[in-house]
Image (cartoon, rainbow, N blue to C red; front, top):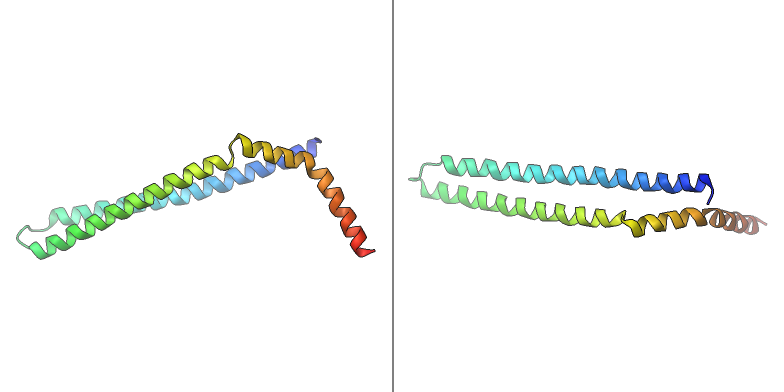
Amino acid sequence: MTPMTLDVALAVQKELQTRIDEADQLRHKQVERAHYEAELARRRFMQVDPDHRLVADELEAEWNGKLREARRVQEEYERHREADRLVLDDTARNRVLALARDFPKLWNDLKRRIASASA
C-alpha cells in the first residue's frame, strides 16, 4: 500500500464519519423537538380547568399523541445510531483499507479498459 492509497482510505473514512455525525445531529434535533412538543402539550393539559371536560379530554389526547411521537422518534434515533455505529466498525474499516490496497490495481484496470474501448 502506498502512502497515497492510505491517504485516500483515511479520507474516505473521515468523510463517512463526518456525514454520519451530521445525520446524527439532525436526528437528535428531531428528538429534542418531539420532546419539547410533548412538554408543551403536557403544560397545556395541566393548565386546563377540570370543569371543562371536553377541552381537558382533547388536550390529554393531544398530549398522549405527542408522547407517542416522541417515543417513536427516540426509538428511530437509537436504531439509526446503532446502524451508524456498525458502518464504521472494524470490519468496515478493514474493507476500506483493503479497497485502498486494491486501488492501484483497480485504477490500472480502468485505464486499460478505457484505452481498449477507445482503440
